[in-house]
Length: 406
Image 1 (tube, one colour):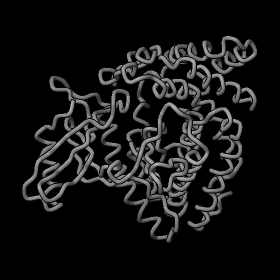
Image 2 (image 1 turned 90 degrees about the vertical axis):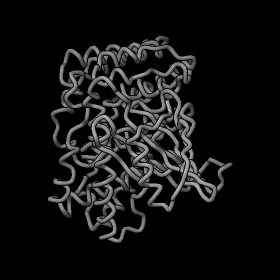
Image 3 (image 1 turned 135 degrees about the vertical axis):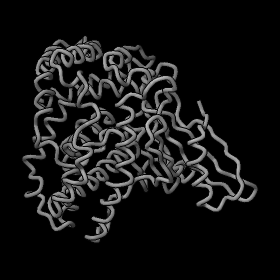
């Protein structure tokens, strides 16, 4: 529901005054439909009078009037605010220090924010009015968009590697508040029994998708059996926590600008949004999540080409920071991380693809499940009209995995 609290109005008033509005009116409309954001409400706000107007976006946490907000929700907003007010500021300074010609700067501008528990929000520039557009989530990315995102992720991760190598004390201090993931303490990820239940539930979708292929079904059973130990290993591996990771790599968190807005083949600019799941992680967490969720069959079969594109872009940027890529992130380590996270994200693909392909009225509602992972997983057991497309995408994924012996 598009309503402004008094606290929201005060924050917007501060923006209005800063931008020269003595008197003004506010118009507010929803930005996203159901299923577009699971951590709050996103609204477009127009500050306007007879002479001018200013478009902003308000992203606010769900309201819990009679009870304390879920800790996970509070942590998510606190984390995103920290990313914008601290980490991106330091990343910008570090890149300027080295005179980076093609820096990572594809982040939205924050106009105001609140970190008061129960009233957490961010007020940002409106990218749509600046000409940016979302990709159609029901369609796999074309090669031009795949390349744009992968190269931008490489530039983003290069800043972490460069700072960690050149100024390790600053990097350690800067990333301490995001060292863990907001889900780290959830029983779903700390209990072997819970994780097995979670895997079994999600694999029902996979077995249905590949039911006509006996060989692929046997392969999927092998994957299902080894995933609990695989997840458990990932929780204990400190070597994977090497860069600031985006963590939420589905298409609704990328906005693209085009030289010709009617010809959306090749983007000229990208903006990466929604940093609530950011954490210290492997760069291949982001790469594998993004690639597997958005690749069609043809793109999956070019996996090695996209891996090379990422590593070559990362390497060139590390050299701009006067770093040796083979010393900072050797290719053998890169390859091992890639193999690990391709398996790690099988369930991610199963969940996110269903959300991307569902109709608005089919989308799950998670506002009352943020402290109850059992309820959240139960919410993923829903049918979609685009079931045939969903099954085809899952089958393509497992044919790819099997062909590469993951």
